Image (cartoon, rainbow, N blue to C red; front, side, top):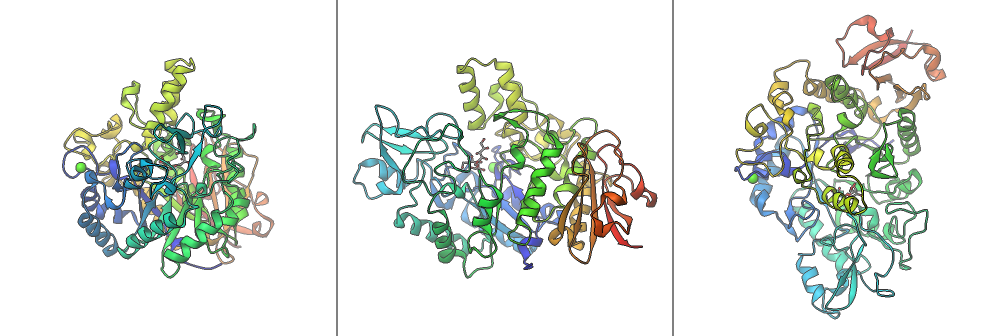
Length: 560
Ligand code: TEU
Ligand code: CA
């Protein structure tokens, strides 16, 4: 397997709006990130991925870009950006930018021009269609509620927006649009960025039939007519050739509706397209129908999905692993126990995510075991996805308390509450009023407290990051699930031919028997276990003892 830096890297995701506010306006900014460079470096991560920092009217917090070449005013200036990238590079940390080119903002000059008339120069930068029978061109739904088509009264045509109406989809069929996008990417690459995380990149090619969804299809079904559309691979190859081909950068595509088979087409080692992708199977495993309705995770299903991806891409493509991001609830509240065993389960999840083959992604605050927040009323939420859902569900007659409960668990705002730096006002995030309330538990859960505490989640996260650096079997090893049908234990071996490791994570608050030799893959049964790392106080005999609540261990397997 080819060894490259981005395979061995750990990525730390920063949501700039919520990381650190440097000037007291309540909004995180680039100078805030600069203030925290030493903290970021102290974690031992290799790459920072920044959520969008480009000019934006912020209907969707920067995912609606009105100027791809400038920095959002609230976040700072291009000079701040240059200073940030210098500061990261000086600490041997690379910077990955978000690339949002499935859609722009409706306030982008392209769209303003496009709307002027049917013959305007930029008209074909977007996707326009005639309505059908007094309604939209087809039945496609927008991600943030309603139809994916918006009528433009002036021209009588509809434009496509798979997300909010303020996020019109760009027309990739148009070579002029493509060359503008590639020029913009080159501008940032020339400025020193080390790669891109590409927003919903597998949606950029739309099936020219513009057919309705089939009854069995939902918005992000693998077969939906804009998911892995017919020209996707042509566009990505062209993009690579015209921007990244001669540069040492990394790319990760966000790709809803991915299956292992589809992923191999986009990130297969010999495809010349992207390096890796984010798949959604895992973070949708606890959904019931849609994201707003969930059930407690069935660990067997969760393990099956991970096994499928670990084995499906092994030796053929590269995995990327995450348990949360800015669109997901806090991982410890969702997959762990954010009450009695918050600290143990946060560590267990870190150990798990950092033990899988592929590139791990950590989201700001995950290294502290930050939790979902407290939400009293709809007025507390900021995210358009949450607010739109609330109104839609109310309109459909759902009870308000039930809707709020859905939001409390699943709202994207859970990930977006400010980073908890210390126990002072606003968690040390801002001297002003934060754009979104801080989680009230910041007095107990914060960086300062955890830096002083040797057994903290933060201390464990750093130890685990160091461990991964010195145990490459976790990066390049082959994954084999152990005791697949256990509903509480997540155990697997990682074997790169030289080093053999057993990872065992008790994903429950009950005691679980440790895997026995007979349960290991045949080739490993004659080996002895030695405990290398654990989220419980470590002592020799522990390798063969039962696992306590949320106990997680990594053991080496060595010849007797
Ligand atoms: O997300 C796209 C996506 O497919 C989902 O994560 C979806 O937005 C979310 O679950 C809604 O419930 C990307 C970005 O990560 C997200 O923040 C943006 O809002 C979206 O694209 C539009 O740019
Ligand atoms: Ca600010």
